[in-house]
Amino acid sequence: MTPNYDNFEDHRIKHLEMTQAVIGRLASNSFLIKGWAVTVAGVFFGFAVNQSDPALARVSLATTGLFWLLDTYFLRAERLFRVLHDRVRTCAEDVEPFFMGATAPWFVKEVKAESNTQSSKAASWLKTFGSLTLVLLYGGLVASALIVASAIGKG
Image 1 (cartoon, rainbow, N blue to C red):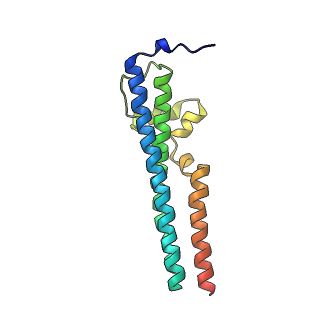
Image 2: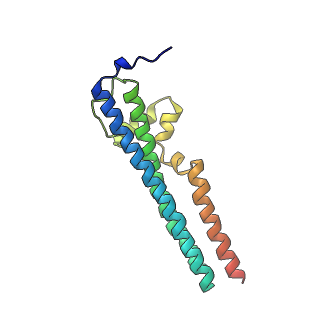
Image 3: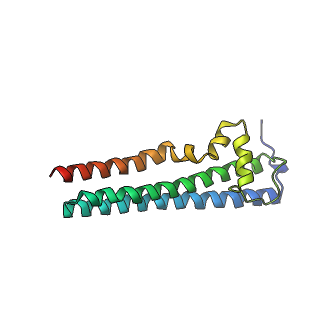
């Protein structure tokens, strides 16, 4: 079956472009946060080893936690905008023209209530915080901090 693109009005295409631009910006911010998290943790690890101070390695746990929370915010917002993008794409009746409030509390509540598992997962802070990509990166940084602190403490 060939999709009929004639049904997509210009205003709907513009709305899709707007939501896609926000999704791209959120993904870019998330990527930058990950880079900063690795850099800051690496600096703390380097200073900890150089000064033979395990407390410096443990301090990186706080910064890693803050970066993890910030990255969770960006990923959750990106997921919510993907839900909005999909609703605009499928011409859902409940989407107002040029609506961009995907993180608004009422929209999040509506998404959580959906039976679609992917959509309801997008609205969950906990599921986003525990997503595989975030757990692997930030869990690895936490484990590295503990290993560095432990190795220096024994030395």
